[in-house]
Length: 393
Ligand SMILES: Cc1cc2nc3c(=O)[nH]c(=O)nc-3n(C[C@H](O)[C@H](O)[C@H](O)COP(=O)(O)O)c2cc1C
Image 1 (cartoon, rainbow, N blue to C red):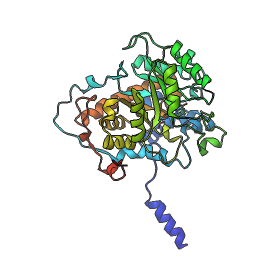
Image 2: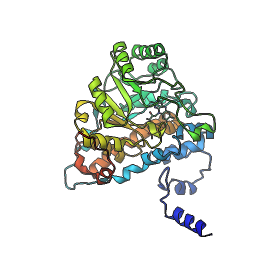
Image 3: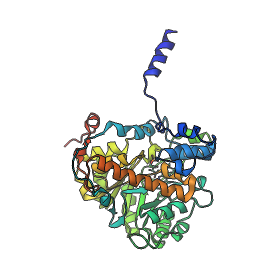
Image 4: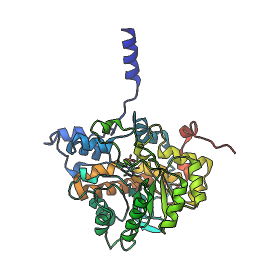
């Protein structure tokens, strides 16, 4: 009995984990004619986490589990979502922020985009929209002038995605990047890269954090575990070979330490992509905020020498600003766009618009007048300092 009471008191004392914070959506819906198991009207979606709730209403358990799954005990998944609150804003008041909207636009590898956000590569878009799948990602990114990074295991082929690119963006023809996994038979990989080049992709995003199948219990229940079932040998030597095969910039995706960021620079990359793959690969891998902070503390020059992209656990404009303040150039989201795609093109477009609006509003609230040049002083990072890894000389 005593041990039961002890356990009960521990549970009561533990902070609950919110997959989506309670923002009043369900309370609101209960006052309408919405019924459980149907999607709320898109107009009632106010924030990015609402799309997760909405997707659960539409997708079957197997489909939702594939999108939602993370590895092992999902400690990194929860950390990805919760870490943001450890870093508080130090908002300066009475700084003129009236022109902040004009500073949302950015460049990634020399291409122009309307905002420092992008759709991260994620497989199996057809679960959300069986007919149009990732075509919605291409089209929404085209009309919103943001970047789309196509996944190798997208439901649509490289060619099908290229066929719906817009010709009328800030760059003229729409710019998309192509993600690849290297196959243990490298000739398959070279062929995939050649197809991406032929169809006009402007960079190869090379996923380096999936050297083996990952432990994903939630999805394994439905026999749906990995997008990348091909266990691949991953080495920097393959990067050298790839460089000889393509003139496109190669962006290693899945950098999680300062050491690997530095090796990537030595190898001559133009950009790196920090990520823990949405916590889908290795449980207890760090969040992008922790990785960016590790780099910022040990080798801040990295952010000047190469462009740094980042993703994992980003759900709000404020999260984006925190990464930008540490020197990140553009921030990706995976699950949120997969969930938004349950509303098709309109849903994906709305997700991009929500993020743009939140980034600009929160920048103003935080006293940031230029989103492209945010001082790290806008952040109180003392809580990260306690855990950060410091490289030895
Ligand atoms: C359903 C799903 C499929 C994914 N497929 C891929 C993939 O094929 N290649 C890849 O590099 N990353 C893949 N990712 C990881 C994303 O690119 C990204 O790193 C991750 O989703 C970011 O975390 P977030 O979902 O919390 O935003 C996938 C993520 C999800 C949710």
